[in-house]
Amino acid sequence: MSQIEEICTPRVSSQISKAILVLQDGTYFEGNAIGKIGTTTGEICFNTGMTGYQEVFTDPSYFGQILVMTTDHIGNYGVHSDEVESDSIKIAGLVCKKFSPNFSRKLGSGSLDQYFTDNHLTGISDIDTRMLVAHIRETGAQNAIISSEILDVEALKVKLNEVPSMDGLDLAPSVSTSEFYEESATSDETLFKVALIDFGSKKNIARELKKRGCHLGIFPYNATAEDILKWNPDGFMISNGPGDPASMVYAIDTIRTVVETGLPTFGICLGHQLLSLASGLKTYKMHHGHRGCNHPVKNLVTGRSEITSQNHGFAVEFNPELTEVVELTHINLNDDSVEGIRRKDKPAFSVQHHPEASPGPHDSLYLFDDFIQLMSQNKA
Image (cartoon, rainbow, N blue to C red):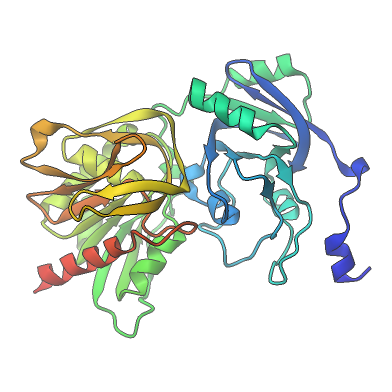
């Protein structure tokens, strides 16, 4: 069989196994198994993006979550080794409407189905994802279980009761680097040393910094302020990551200390929430979160609107009593939630969305340039 014939040959029905998805509230769906035959659990959420599924699946911020993709077809362009945001799949499981075991992209390195099997990822397809997403929007985030080996709904409900809530979970230890390492700038000239605190950082954050002349020191989640400051950085990048930010007291203390040094600091997603907590604000668990690459955000400083990439289930609660110290810089145009803050007393700022995108639009890339400008001004 030629490579073209192999790619275009559909999976026959005898290869398809059944699978069941059960939600914490007892709602369940029957469909077909994808990836590895097995059982997986996590908090269920949905992503409204139309492209970039491989980048989404490898985003460390999704660790511990079963992901529903709202676009109809998943897997049709296969996978590519360059289109990853970490070293492995990070979602706990996948739910989709139509899953393609074959792919048609010439540059694709393999099928998504094989990629899932190789990464021991269990999923379910051929269910009514519109009904499921509408249910999640109505009832809120909740734990779920997918199984293609246990097809007894009542037995799955019992197993599901053992799964902890995302509330109060610190998941950074599961996705952070275990030890310090460095990455060189990819620009013609190295301009700055940036300490990137890795709570589950996406690869594209490092790429965007390196091509702007930053030599990176990547520190593990539990690095102390003393450890980081010994490296003598010009600025700090606080990365994205999974879990409940309020549970990460050690990280909040570290960030509070590095911000007080007066060196430029930039936080993204979880990093935004941690900077906010270190600045006296509070966070809360959202009803069903923001996930996708089509979320509108308004920059209150410039008055311009941006279409952004997002992935978060917790958000920051702005406190007007702290306006002498913290300025609200961005809001979400769908629900007016906090999308960005800036410290008035220190060169520190953060955003809830992902300016590095991957996948998603590039409307917010200017924030990396703002960070570079802050470091330039500080060195001058």
